[in-house]
Image (cartoon, rainbow, N blue to C red; front, side):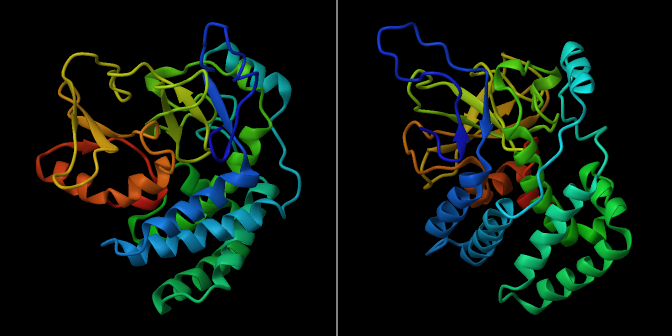
Length: 305
């Protein structure tokens, strides 16, 4: 069973023709804890060890906050139904407006994380962000959600997005996975975000199936393998890995659009987690950037790379 995920339906009914579910929704009660554990396991002896440990603390704070928030409020049923009927995500980040519960998720995460022992520069950024959220929180959260934050506010945007991950995972968990449908350009069928990475899973009745993962709400959705998740091309797709590194994390490159998205082979190592192992394989991103490839996966913790 996937860690941090909630699969609907019987995945163990032996003798039936396997039909993988299109969408798998996040389980906020375990999603961030699983990430904290994976990041902590990756950190020792890793060249990005300090940053991975930093993110492990952040994921722990996300886990603690996720269970201590007011009930999340979905958009009205008729609005979500119209979105689905027109092939649009029901929780589109492009149109959803920050509400008080969304702001509370960000504020409480920043406060909880600020209580952890952190480098002085990070502590200063958190203090400034807490002041900004008190005076202009809805605007700051809305700007980060719609990718309109100034470049100089990158550190604050990362923290806001971490809070939004908590909020959107809670909203996504309230949806009916069977009602979700594919949307344009392989975007997340829940919130419309681009795929962060894709994962070849080893789940019962979905063995060796490829799922994209959303870096915002945590939804996973099925996309046919050897298909560019950025432009849909099937020709000119190839796979790259870093020399001397395990081949359980590769980059799926596309000649037509010159972009790439990581692909994580969880089927070969169940400990892998797409967000965490995407960050831990930053060296692969740097190698591909030097060759002129453009990263297509959106990971809040790799902003600026």
